[in-house]
Image 1 (cartoon, rainbow, N blue to C red):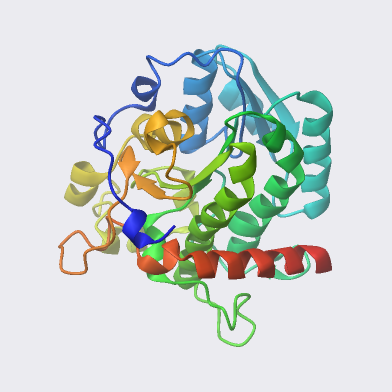
Image 2 (tube, rainbow, N blue to C red):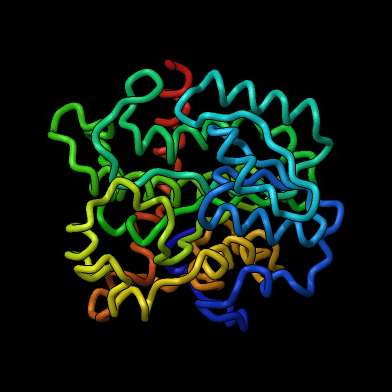
Length: 325
């Protein structure tokens, strides 16, 4: 695919459609999903909406007590299995348990992530945002490929972000070993990596009838902002001096129920058949970024996040990093 493939489908849904409404008319009973981060923020609402439609959902959990409390009121078939995306042994253990328990995997929703956190290293020394947001999900998906390949029409959703506009993959210094760490550039790189991952994965699922897509869920107040100070969020125009949502957030931000809608749309819609690897936002395929638009910072997808060449380059790097870990 290329940025020229980023053509909206006129889905009929709006930016602030609730996720449950996106799948309200679909028959999903009997399908199986894994939702990383499925007990917090938009991940929780993704789990809730799928379970209500008869999907058996497995939620990987790093904090069992928190997960049990968050998931307690959800109706439907929801199970948990231990997983820490920053720990490759944990990823492998989770994947093996899933392979042992499941006969099919219709949806793998790689939703979990961290944003703009202080510098940290995970795994064999990977920068943490790249390591958790990209490499943890890369390892998980690789391990679950046997399930995905034998499930007709399986879909993988990679949660990217408009944050990809901050930075392409830093090909010469992915782990911030040469230059000082900068949390937003690290986040931008990781979100670009998520989009490129979906691009490359779509080609690897093609012969088995599977699909992969990248999704920008929108601006949403969730625990993802836990590493940001009040001063930063005031400067961004997200909150006012009293800690309340500012005008920008009131106008443009979504609720968690609305924030899961593009994920659910991409995981289920027939409109994306024949459009492997595209980047989606607001319940549709995103347009290419228009640099002249006043919304260029927040809407559309940059060409470097849609590059087949870059996607394949990142896939090879990721395989090498995983082999050496």
